[in-house]
Length: 236
Image (cartoon, rainbow, N blue to C red):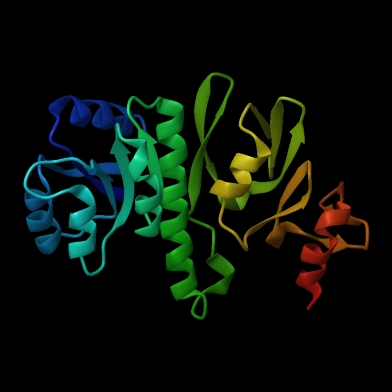
């Protein structure tokens, strides 16, 4: 479960974000702030995992708020101004949503933020519990006109098939129109690896590998020529 707050001077922006977030059961709203000073006061006294942050606000701008925080939470920028994107990424924001943004785009941003946060937690806990690195991490994947919550530990591999992808799970599969490049960007690096232009695999599900293929359960997955060096790094 991740807690979040909304920092925006427009009430309608609060309503849209909250409506979108209400459809995601792993998000819990803890604060509405209508300017950066309110947000700073809340963050100084409370713990929050994720901020949906507007840029242009009275008194103190959104990025000024980030610079003022010693250890800021994960941040998804929500703004109508695309010209600040580079500055945002220099401040390590997780994603940059241009208003008006769709529910699908919102989910992608949340997946990225939550995955990066949990990947950070895994890094800190790796020495203590390496066997449980991805057990509790989940993402939403759209398929069959629904958004399915999938545990990362259940994903074996993802195969690109024309205009859609097949997400092969421990039990069954899910067909989605999400691109394999988007999965590669959203899923935690080190836990998932691109091994072919059409395949992305869960590293801990690999049973065996040769110079040209990977075995995952009964599936033989080819290794692309440009990915052989990366895959070979698993043996070092």
